[in-house]
Amino acid sequence: MSFRNGTLLLALTAALTFIAGCAGTSQSRVEAEAAASQAELARGREQLIRAFDAAWIRIIARGEDQEILKTEPAHRPGAALSYMVRLADCLPHPDLAKWPEEPVGLFKEILERGTIRRVVQSVPETPANTSYYFSGISEKYLRAVLDAIGNQYGVTLKLEDVALPPGPLPST
Image 1 (cartoon, rainbow, N blue to C red):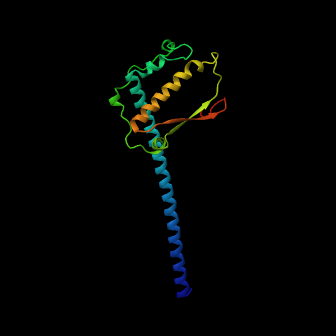
Image 2 (image 1 turned 180 degrees about the vertical axis):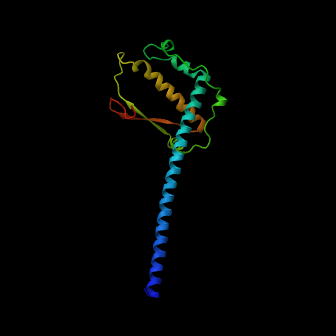
Image 3 (image 1 turned 90 degrees about the vertical axis):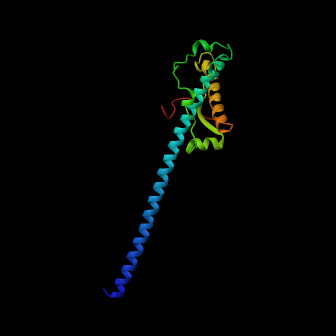
């Protein structure tokens, strides 16, 4: 091999090493960004859970849950007080259930979008179906929680239902 061919080979080797190094760095950067994005998404989910907890604790502390029960079921207001029992009497004081600060990930996305989605399935609304007695309560409880979160963060949260056909849900 001549000096000229050796120089060319050295230059090609250096160029390929540089290109491979850049590709490796780029791949590592993409993987690092994906991992950071997943971590932020997970942190946002945790914040959403903490926000629901903070809202619910405040709703119970103010007695809003009992006021809701006085209106249900629609066909017999107040009857729900006899069959809805709160098992947890030892919820923390609202001051101990802090609202998440600096929302990120999923929680930030929900607040910015102003919409939270839930999966629903249609079931018959008749006295033969047990959900008939509870669905009004669940709707009002959820609305109270969303209103409390919205009030805390200065947004109006809308509820968007994502309907699935009756049957087992993918998570069951």
